Image 1 (cartoon, helix red, strand yellow):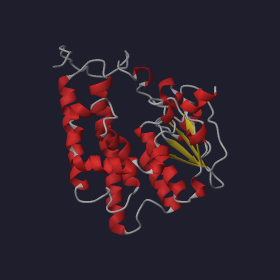
Image 2 (spheres, helix red, strand yellow):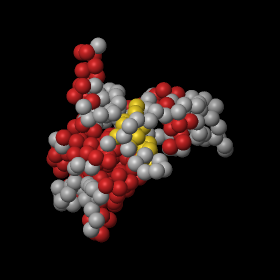
Image 3 (cartoon, helix red, strand yellow):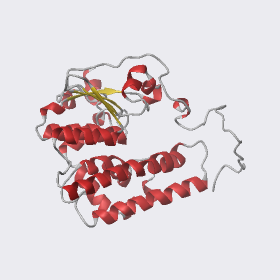
Length: 292
C-alpha cells in the first residue's frame, strides 16, 4: 500500500517553490541552459565522448568498442566522465554539445569541423552510417532495425523515469504509480519476449544497433541489475529475453563497453575514463587501487 495518504490538488499554475525530493532532487530544475562556465577536455582521438556508465551511456561505449572490434580505426575514442550527480552536465562546454544537458554527448572531430551529436539513438545512427556497420542497408531489414531502435527510445522513459523512479528513487512509495509503471514495464518485456521468440536478434538474424540500444536497459533489467526490481517484475519468466541478454553479454566488445565511465559496483568493472585500448588492462579501479 502507499505510504502517502494525502490527497493532492494541483494549483492552477505550477511553480517551482520546493525541492522535488528523491535521489536526484539536487539536479532537477524546470529550466535549461548552463549553471556554470566549464570547458570540456579534448583528447587525441577522432571521437570525444562525454558520458557516464548508465544504460544510455553504455549504448555508445559498446557501439564504439564494437566498431573498433570490426577494424574501424576511426572509431577510436576518448571517454570523459560526466558526473551528473555533481551537475557536470550543466557546465557551459557540455551544454554547447547537448543543450538538453543529458548524457551521452559526442563530439565527432574526424573532419575539418567538429560535429556535435546528442541523444543516444542519434549517436548510434551517426556512428553506424559513418562506418557502414551494424545497421543493415537492405530496406526491409533497415526499417525493422530502426523500428526497434526507436521503440527503445520511446519505451525506456517508462522503465527509467517511470518504474525505476517510483519503485527505487521516489521519497514515498505510491501504490498507484508503481502499479502503473510495473504494468507497462512488464508489457514491454512481453513485447521483447515475443519478438525474440521469432528471431535471434531484434532486427532479425544479425546483431545491430537495435540490440546495442535495448540491451543496457532491458538486458540489465532481465538480469536483475536495474533498480533492484528483478524479483518484483518476475524477469526470469521472459525466457527469450533472458537468452538474448546472455548472448549479448558474452560479446567481448560489450564486456569492455559496459564498464567505461562506470562509477558503481565491482572495482574491476569500473573504468572511469577510457583514452586508450590498454586502459582496460591497466586503469580499472581495482588495478589503480593495487598500484596506488
